[in-house]
Image 1 (tube, rainbow, N blue to C red):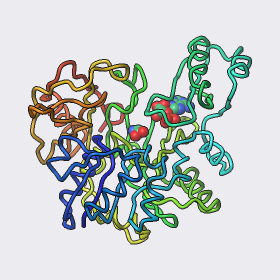
Image 2 (image 1 turned 180 degrees about the vertical axis):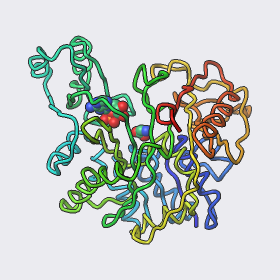
Image 3 (image 1 turned 120 degrees about the vertical axis):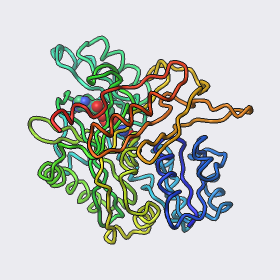
Image 4 (image 1 turned 60 degrees about the vertical axis):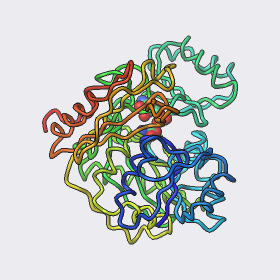
Length: 417
Ligand code: AMP
Ligand code: GLY
């Protein structure tokens, strides 16, 4: 089968890598892809949010299945247009994509469904926010931009001046949500669904903070572990019964057809699991740790979901642990230099996989970084320690000026294992 993957990140490279090994792969196309996906298939020029360009790419390549990696094309309605053209698409339509593209929309749905989450207030006017804030000092609050923000829409602080500055910026163009700060640990749970049935994949844990020990600023994700040792069956059953089932029930009741993967960002607190957010696509960096564990055929999986046959899925996983480390550009998550030459690039092996994020080759063939998060180094092992040391060894062998990464991905989950 010929397939088209939209996006250019390490998540899309991991999907392409899994597809390249599928027994049904007969042509792999990425729009726009990166320097590594060019070696697994064919990269196509174009903007994945441009519906006409994506439709043309499917016609030109003869692709029957389209995987939408990032959220922006889903929010732009790309999946709806592709479905209207008769293609199988992995990813929800524009209306359901509001679960990620509008936190206000998502919040209203979870409140109607009675799903446990942080106490929230919403503001559309700065004066109302400024009038509400006094008396809340000393407590850390979380401010969120309602719309898409490419991982930069969340701000935590206990300082009223900082909170006001962030709220003022957001309120120029969007609604701001204010949440109580939840203490706990985070899980990313992925549900493959087709509008009628769903199936859960092994839980992952992303590491959102820039610094060791979960200190520092929020990022898009500095690494992930899968599976998570503490996501035992009891906890997963509880998450399913109080968060996941009520969400799908509500989607069905409200007639929102959801086909693709629904990502539940969960905080496990002392008083139980609470929903932090929905995403309408696979996580990055979680996918880079999740897909290498999949023993089942990856194209079969995406095709079965996209053609509405989730009920038939019987997924198998390798009994290993995967630890992925994000290699970032200097300055990330703030401003960072673009297109840094990559001086050393280790080869991947069976137990150590290097996924590229938005890398490119210049006219001289020099490999260059593309964004703030540049690579994911993923180690696979019999246990956390083996997986982590393989990931670290791979990460340490990548050289470009200013490269940095966290050395403690997964450690907090595995002290006793
Ligand atoms: P979101 O886009 O809502 O997932 O937020 C991004 C990240 O901010 C999450 O993965 C958490 O690390 C953090 N975060 C969001 N909401 C809260 C909250 N209410 N309490 C604590 N941390 C939060
Ligand atoms: N890992 C979090 C995200 O993909 O949004």
